[in-house]
Length: 152
Image (cartoon, rainbow, N blue to C red):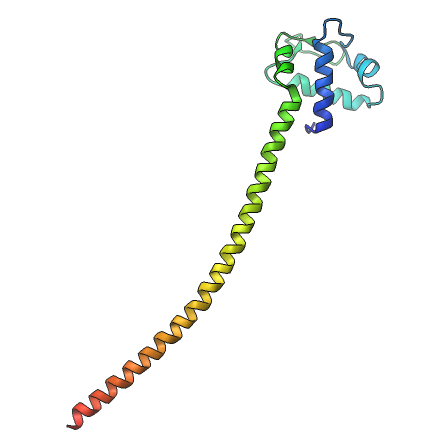
């Protein structure tokens, strides 16, 4: 399941309920009846697997939590107070925005590089033409000097 803002909010709500002292959530059916009556069961199963696959483990029993019976372990309250999945989503979103900004700057740099290359290419031909004119001038002067030297 891809972590979106809505998914992060729902996972945090589930974690908050699991952390509560008198939690009424211990299975996917409980999730549907207590927290998410309007969500499809596939979404709730996906949320369970997202929590179950997170490392370090957030759910008990440690060996193999299943959708029929699960509850919070000792690390879950600390995870919740650290920001839980909303903090993870915000971190991922920040990284995504940084990557977008870098791509944007790279494209802008590429535009300047192309302009600079075109300018250099045009300047190269002007330099080549001036060098060719200078070469022809020197060649003419050399031929006239040689011609006058041998005629004397």
